[in-house]
Length: 421
Ligand SMILES: [Zn+2]
Image (cartoon, rainbow, N blue to C red):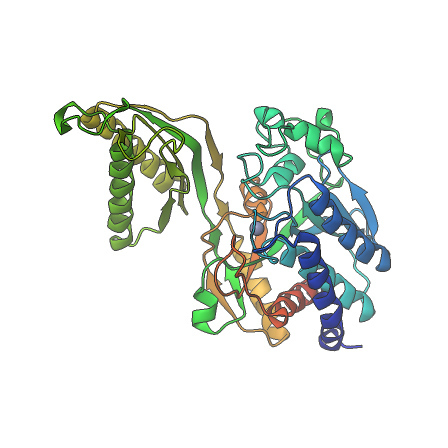
């Protein structure tokens, strides 16, 4: 069977797997697959069933990440690693993460059906807990696999269960005591490259009318999950000059950051700043109370390390200036950072060529979001990322990816893997 015919033959199976994943995650409105928990485990079980059907070697590491390996004829040759994640945010969509693992499985299945025999090992990974919502830290599974999980991460508690990350890892059959800085949990041996497919989280590909973006780079980010501004709770009648209004300080910071972003946009320097949490304490800040404390989160991202560092300095300057002007104090809380992920230029060219051989149209595209792939890129492993056309963004129930576009990613992977030697 030709590779194109084998890919076409995979489509019903892929559609059925996506339906099964939606049923596993069903949590109206949308999909919830909690990290390190039953629903992520159920998604893993679905992938394991497919890996068994394909006769792949199935292993799980100490962080409970899954690996499916198709052994090559030369076991010493550097392996090609592909993967993504199955967890979602609460009430998110079905495709953020899952599409990448399914595309890799479909590529391997089609290659298998076409009679291909790999020279080097091909391994598909399903990484745990990519989403930062569960433990206040993103890319957890791939960080652990690469030996770059921050040491304090294992003691973090999931707000809803009260259990630590170490507890959750144990509940999924992992062993947190084997996770340590510098200790890789990935399958043994050298890695030739890491490839991920992920839905695009913006409508650029939809706008361009192209199913697949070849990622040119993944931004790094710095995050503070809870920055606390403290002023003074006061009566609604207090004159302005006496107020130490924490909510207004928060608003001032927000508008200053938006102005900074507009300035950078105008200068053509790509970045993004997002404030997700932004609130007074609704239990005590009634309509007649000046809010004396206020909490917000921040995610600041850019594609260049020096640019990101400069933006972080500007951010702190804004906080200091606002604190002085408003008579408030600002506790920044814990800072987390995700590295920049430069995408390998040669891989970008090879992936574009592989897509072209399969009749798949592509365009170069920066990824505004961070992905597991960024960890591999930051560790110096040549990394490629395919972005799949998707309407309505992600982290919401309205994600909309055509299965045909996922198959375009699978076809690209399959042609790349077939011709990699
Ligand atoms: Zn994702």
